[in-house]
Length: 286
Image (cartoon, rainbow, N blue to C red; front, side, top):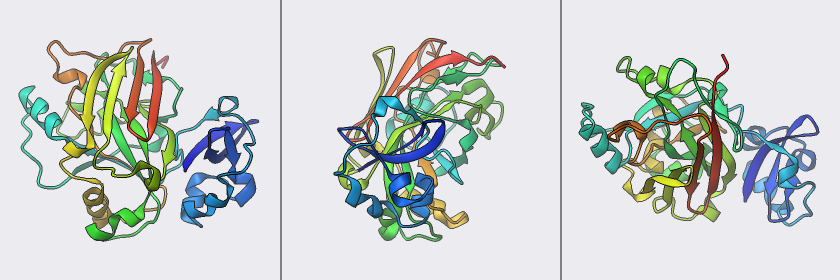
């Protein structure tokens, strides 16, 4: 199943994205959001409605980030083998990690599929990062690795837009990863049964049709189960939490010369069996 969050008739809602359109789950289940569904009955409650007639077309709504109101969004830094090598080659002193390297991204920075990706006015070093996002379906703490996949509701595409000069102001990346409008998240959440083996997914990013990243989740240093287990240790995971799992090689700052995004650029993040997340870059007005 594919779940979408959206605005229709000036009201937020969520539903199932089918070949025919959107099946309105907020009306059928009496819950206001996808996060609320995950906190309650879970995705299985939507299954009886998957074959029902669509209530509206996908192009008649304005998509929202998949979980626009998540409690927490964690991101994993330098989590692909090839990205680690390119970061080291670019002169960044980064040893091979022994545990996932996590940082926080605030949901206020999210934009949806089709929304502008916002380049801040204080920097021209705006970079792209194609990532697989995990959406937590069942919360918990100290989740064992062998139990972790049972806590996953689904997966989505993420573009961890990074303001590199601000990111490298210090050893802490928070400022460069949290400008408003830089975290693209969508277009939908796909349940694990449709994704299959999450450890063997092609992931790529194009800018204006040119392939700049072309990787596979088989190259992850820490897989989904390891990340979920690790993240649950220091703070309890909550239903609807989002974890972006890192980016493969090909990021702009590591290229010679560097390639940074410009206003008007169109970014497509594609992940096999999940979909395509598209955003156009604009310069912030303020």
